[in-house]
Image (tube, rainbow over all chains, first blue to last red; front, side):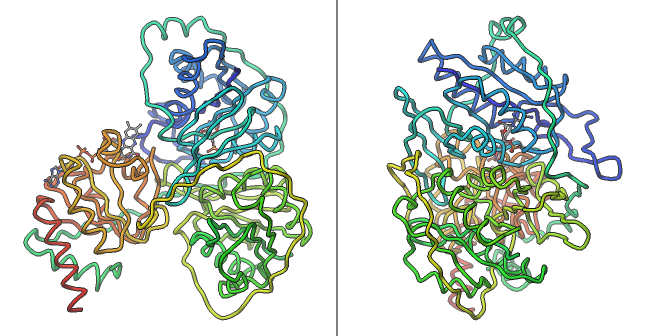
Length: 247
Length: 321
Ligand SMILES: Cc1cc2nc3c(=O)[nH]c(=O)nc-3n(C[C@H](O)[C@H](O)[C@H](O)COP(=O)(O)OP(=O)(O)OC[C@H]3O[C@@H](n4cnc5c(N)ncnc54)[C@H](O)[C@@H]3O)c2cc1C
Ligand SMILES: Nc1ncnc2c1ncn2[C@@H]1O[C@H](COP(=O)(O)O)[C@@H](O)[C@H]1O
């Protein structure tokens, strides 16, 4: 069982969102970087759980990013990845990322390719689907559960107002979200071991981007809260009805 | 060069998110001086021609048993065939679970630029630019699409459904259907409640409620408002409430017209999933709770006293106008 987990680097969830260069660039000064939560908590930890049950399984991590992504890659190795590949390139869109990863995945012989549901900065939710088309593999998005029986994966995915359970033969691409696994923290042994695990750096392939980000904007600030007295809930109902027109 | 809209259905019913996509597609077609058509896969219980009232002129219906459930490979091939046959240069999806599964594949197949999470009509005067949510809804980005064929996945609840007169011509499209590799064995729908992702009103509660046994009053308020239920992450993590109710950065991101937050502090990760709500009401006993900064209306006080009173006041308002 060979598992590929796609790991991206995102600003910490409490990071202040601001832009520079005439609103064309994310202001990175002072920002802490983390492994995208969906990639870490769900895709990677589920892969580790699978490996814990099947010692023949191996976990390869892949990241498309600059050398500044290495701390998060080391953390993923500390959690339990076996080896990592960093494609040395700063991707500007999901398509670019998917092309880079597909080049690694094509000849890698992976049975399972896991991504997060989405990156919490770009919110593309696209890399997994694009990758699956490039590799001509089945794809299940936003999975909340994954069980393996031999070469068959049983996957639960979220749909509007419920879930759908499906079966699919490996190899398959799956994007992961909450429910898959419980978050963990790396232990000392893992952190020590991660220092010597292989982290290979490879060159990107040339891609012609299909999109470009022209500018960013912050939403207008809220006007301020209108407080209603606790003894006067009727006033709140009136405001929601007459003023906000939402009930 | 008509606009093509993917019409998503589940168990024969066209989803609300698709009605938004249809309205959006029709409006975009009008902006570009063309018309919109739809593509519908699988069986539906209603007459598809009725979807014409959302502005589509024609619907390509591919009625086949193998299309009952989504398999992204099969769906992508069929949609690509329809798009190519009609020369569509613009394809619209809802950015819901199915849209997120199919649109990226189709983008690769048709070499078409894709924007997911669009929140408004594109600007098409000079180039082609779409606004989308980024940074968990804390900001917007303006994305330029540079290819000949373009795909937009519209965020649910971002575009208002408009219906008028009109019926669509329904043509059956004969496509080569492969047998799906993803075999759906079971579908579990939570019956009787409004799906959270589609809800216009949401009542949400957090750790301030103290324990799962106190959710009765929250459910009653939600029922009175015909609202869906949501909760903060620790509430789902401790299994007070089911996981699918968890909203926020790592849960569901929602954009209802009304979001009522009860006993939730308003941590930045929680706000990330709900800050696109049109109107936010906060009920919290701590006047310093950060949520009040993101709220439109608020009551400082004990939820256990306020919520039952609020439910009664709404009931009263309904009865007496
Ligand atoms: C990486 C990361 C991702 C995260 N993702 C999410 C996410 O997606 N969603 C999410 O919700 N959280 C998320 N969190 C957690 C988040 O930081 C907060 O811890 C969480 O939202 C707090 O939940 P809460 O407001 O219910 O509880 P608390 O913070 O404990 O707040 C309870 C509130 O209830 C009020 N209260 C108490 N008693 C009463 C009463 N009787 N009447 C009225 N009010 C009362 C209190 O004043 C307080 O404000 C994430 C955290 C991290 C680190
Ligand atoms: N730069 C990257 N390197 C490796 N994997 C990535 C990268 N960007 C995105 N991914 C993976 O693709 C998923 C979806 O990303 P996106 O389409 O950008 O929302 C993420 O959760 C990651 O698993």
